[in-house]
Amino acid sequence: MLECTLYQEKEHIARIILNRPQVLNALNRKLWEEIYGNLEHAEKNQDIRAIIITGAGKAFCSGDDIKEVGRLQTPQEVRTFFQSAVNAITKLVQLPKPVIAAVNGLAYGGGCEIAMLCDLVVASEEAAFAVPEALIGAIPPIASVIGSHIVGKFSVNMMMLTGRPIAATEAKQIGLINEVVSATHLIRAAEDLARRTMATAPSSIKSIKKLMRLRFREEELMQAVEELINIVQSDEGKEGHKAFIEKRLPSWVKP
Image (cartoon, rainbow, N blue to C red):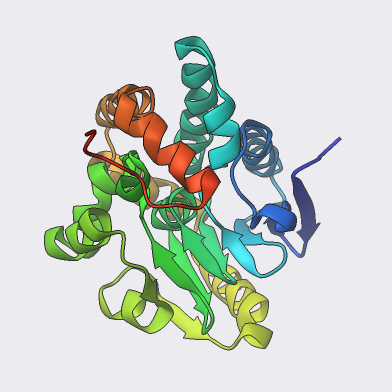
């Protein structure tokens, strides 16, 4: 039984809908696990030629569920949470079928990084992108490892080191996304992209994706996740997450 996602199949396209609109589709452990399961199901179904990921409600994904992360008490609980994320990320990267992100609203933190991992990205005019993890005493592991390969060193550094969100038009200018369309045409545009990929040979797509992911080294991702686990459990990480929950600015320097 799916609790945090919706999964649909139609005309050789699988659609995965992140479905926690009440919290802007924040990534709790269950949502990460369902993303993995849905991707695996789409991979095994030979009738599926392409996958679309989008969000329910007004957001694509607001990133990791800070309240859930803040409730984690032990290092093992923190590690288990992020291992669920690693499993989904690895499945997304290794999938031999094209994955298209249809970004319908804000894509922050892990949401922006999911878009980075997709093969093609179409966004609505209302979409916004950010990797603001450093503002709460965390790091964006995917953006840190492969962000410079996607949008260049200076563009990704501006996003990571300042946390500044960018609009869909700027995201297209720096190469983070492929297309910007109206909200009413978003899913249609993503489906059009999916159908265009179906004109190519599945074996060609599989080989292209295999070569493209040479840039994505799992050992580097694991190193980044270890850094994230350590910083989340540090004094600054705890203060940052607590400040976010309490809706105040964090106090990085102790008196």
